[in-house]
Length: 98
Image 1 (cartoon, one colour):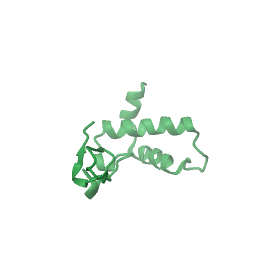
Image 2 (cartoon, helix red, strand yellow):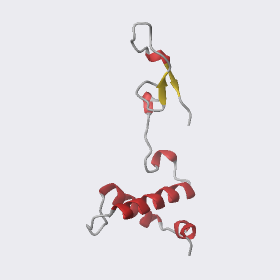
Image 3 (cartoon, one colour):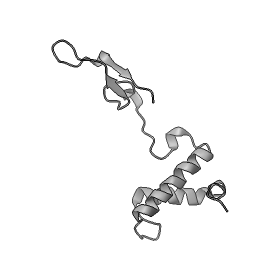
Image 4 (tube, helix red, strand yellow):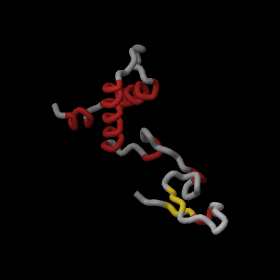
């Protein structure tokens, strides 16, 4: 069985357990995840979420920018320029698309 086939057949209960283990840093039986186990589990969870079309706002690592989207508080925004006195004008921010 390939990795892709394994993720395709992954039971939703196992997916939720993997996700919780990543969040807590330990397996359901209390044993600590090693960095390698955490990395592999995270890759599996992300692949599962993409493959099974989990809504973006429910995916691992999703950040709800809410009312901060497109403002100076949004890390996807870069400052265009400073005013003549060196102050930052919030209207001078532009969104950066990646």
